[in-house]
Image 1 (tube, rainbow, N blue to C red):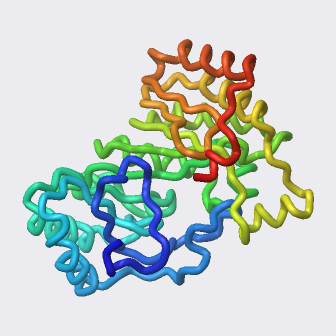
Image 2 (cartoon, helix red, strand yellow):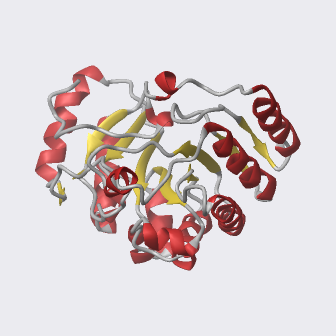
Length: 289
């Protein structure tokens, strides 16, 4: 690992071969009850001088890099004019660069206009990753995501309108057994409204030290059994009518799935049914890798 990182680095699976640069440290929201990724980091935006120094350190090792991911939790919090400058600098320094990606919080997107996002696209912002988690309004409040269902729809729709590819993640099991069906159905409804380019499903894994982990210890929250997570996945896929590339190949999932919706919906549903019938679940050991 390059000597330019502050703490643990988190990135989307699709950025595995990318150069990771921390434009920010931590997450500007950092209140979600299920997330422990940035709890030990005090949020700040790196100065231009710091980021340039990181680039100069990385350059000898990444001369031919084609993708860069700007970490940490929500680099889109940076002001638009500063982001334009950062993007221009990166494309100038890395002649083979084809795409720059960022995580965004819904709050970041609500604060930016569609025109600002279009400007960022013109300067080379190639993909935005948004943690939707759920489309159930009460659950968004319960896990302290910081926005309502309608605000989440507005945030995601801005990206789609701008023409920047949007990749969203949702969390299977986030509502526990009681909210399982409504969580799946309302999440699908939200995604149908937003129409993201990519949809990734993760399955909830409790992170020690988080509020949700503590709630589970106190028996105030219950994880879904493996079979129940597949039932929730079935309800989700069954209710999706948007055009999106759907994946559940994250390590946390009991069943890896992949396909283009709506074309592959029936195939995905049949795979889930088969796994349910035959008990084809990934082991807990493999989920932890």
